[in-house]
Length: 137
Image (cartoon, rainbow, N blue to C red):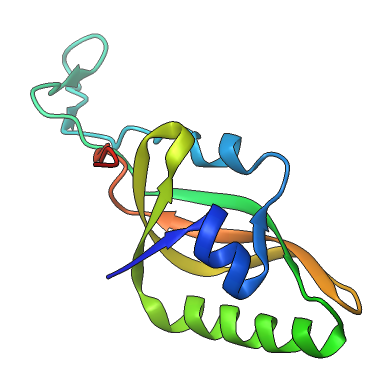
């Protein structure tokens, strides 16, 4: 299990920072899974078991920017960061201002734009544990 601090380690070591809208992306609420449903043919409406409700996994698109000091530094940071994301599995993302740790899984990117010394994209992150609200201690 890895723990990332976007304002510290990822920014300094990998040149990665959240872009505008990243914190909103992390706050997208999870949908409720369909529970047990009975649609009796001889009764009006639908009977739903609301005893236990569970949440769907969330698919988050978190905008980031990855910046290098020059093209060579960018290439090194790019390779190192995306190799880390692809091979890590679940990781903890600590967001201090929300006082929350998210347990996430990297699933790819969208909206990728590559430039000489930086790139922008949206990380696709899967939150398989939306019910867990872990505070930073």
